[in-house]
Amino acid sequence: MGTKRRKATRRARKARPPSRKPRPGRSARKAVRHKPVRRKAARPQSSSPSPPPARSGRPSPVSGGPSIVVTSLRPLAVRPGGSALPPPAGSALPVSRPQVVPAGAGARPAQGLSSLRASSAAGAPLPGRPARRAAVAARRRDVCAMVLAAGLGKRMLSESSKLVHAVAGRPMVRHVVEAAKAAGMARTVVVVGNQADEVRRAVGEGDKRIGFAYQNAQLGTGHAVLSAESQLLGYEGDVLILNGDLPALRPDTLKNFIEFHRASGAPLSLLTAVVPDPKGYGRVMRTYSGDVSRIVEDSDATTEERTTREINCGIYCADATWLWDPLKRARADNTRKEIYLTDLVEILRRDGHKVAAFRHPDPEEVLGVNDRRELAAAVRALHRRKAAALMEGGVTILDPETAYIDVDVKVGQDTVIEPGVMLRGTTEIGRGVVIGTGSRIADSVVGDGTSILPYCVIAQSRIGRACRIGPFAHLRPETHLEEEVRIGNFVEIKKTRMAPGSKANHLTYLGDAEIGRKANIGAGTITCNFDGVSKLRTVIEDEVFVGSDTQLVAPVRVRRGAFIGAGSTITKDVPPYALAVSRAEQVVKEDWVKRFGPRARQKNDKGRGGRAD
Ligand code: UD1
Ligand code: CA
Image (cartoon, rainbow, N blue to C red; front, side, top):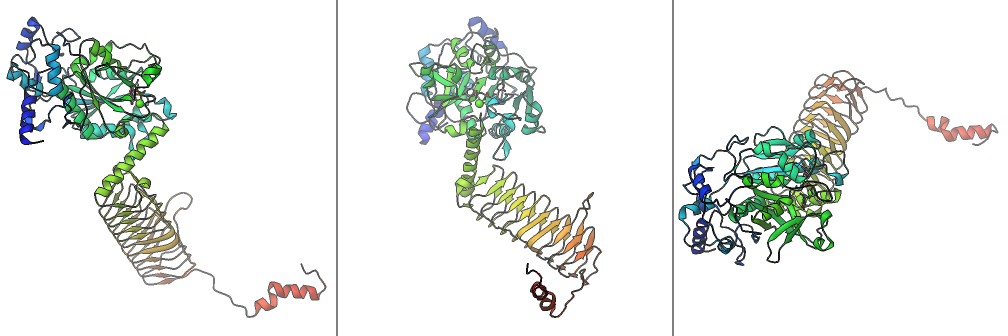
């Protein structure tokens, strides 16, 4: 967009009318004028994008193509609760909006339907409108988030709440809460109910920006929202309401949606998507002129309504002033006998309000997870997205379709990830690492230049720089390998530290051990770390040579530079630079096989006339 055009758009936006506020009658207007309206300090106008045009055909700078759909434009004189303004403070939220709106800002003269429609559609200034009101229209309102996470999630057929199922390394609901936080929400209220403790834990309880509301019976999404009313008492900004089952939601989408909502001037905005298979979703019904008229749930829809492919995604932005009282009028007169949040659309429309719809172009991101198939689809979507982001950051992924990399994993540049690798949880992989096919690494750190050969299983371990691990190695929790350590095939290590340059190349178990620098652990070495009651430590100091097939019976210490003969069972400490061998001395009997071996015995038996077998 050229500078001139941008300026024009900005001017146009400044001149937009305060279309979201009620239009009081003469007496109401008078009252409003004397009542201070708290609001957030206005941010510089240039930082907010221009409103999306609805009918101009021009692509929107906000969302990349959504359209405002205004359902009805007859403004109300008073709010549904009866007063011209939202309820006074006493808010559970830290709402700090110290500035007073210019006198008369809460009021606005009556305007015809056509003039308002024109303004919403094109964002054009309305002739004869006072400039001070324009500033109010463009001001940035507070916005907080509400995440609905109290549902039963029956279609999941699970002992756990649907919301705590892991999706690419995080519980489902946490993705939604994180997206809200990343979109700039100062506060998020999570509505819990079914398996409430489990869901709270999954969200994380230490964050001051997150609060919880309790829905005592799962009576539907509308009821869930009403359960959070007390948490938002007196709050006058916008509420971003999100279903908790949207793990693929991106923060940028939410930011764009909020901007869209602010620009639309509607008391309620919806995010919608057009999908090839809308089964199970609420359908967005529109009038002939294209305005949203209501949402009809799949189970309540007629055959004809079910052919609509535009769905409600469970993402809403509502002006708190127009949320609670209208929603209380929703009835459970539907097949599910629930109080639907989606009924708010029809209620507001009947009250003469407008409802705006933001059509999102990427349905994959905004589809709810209700069953295991949709769970798998969400996991795949997030893994695909993660692989794409890593490749953009200089990581080679040989087959992105089989890269199972959780969202919080970090991978350094020039690392190569072979097909079928799983990187889970909080794993951090350095630069120039190779991760062989079939390996699974969870909550571990891998240093620069290390090679993990195929089929290794690694959990809660730290691996230093330039190590070589595998193939077929198993590093269990609390394994700490420093630089240039080599671990070969069929080696299992647990709660063991190995100092730089040490090796255990074949068929070994090291548990509860401390191994110094440049130690060589021979094939088949086993630390006998468990006496049937407790776990005991083995210490192998620097430059020790442990011969093959050695058992180290803990607790035991092998001092620096000692040498252990193959096949030994070491039960006592070994002094520095000593040789320790503990095997029965070898016995050699010359010609024993010829004289007493099996064939010789056979011959002797035949000679005596006995049976050959
Ligand atoms: C909902 C919408 C539907 C939309 C779909 C998008 C309603 C009535 N329908 O349907 O229009 O297309 O999402 O994915 O809203 N929840 C509670 N308490 C309850 C019931 C639900 O907190 O009593 C929570 C759930 O935990 C879930 C969210 O609300 O996170 C949505 O509930 P769900 O049952 O999945 O709604 P859908 O039938 O998918
Ligand atoms: Ca759902």
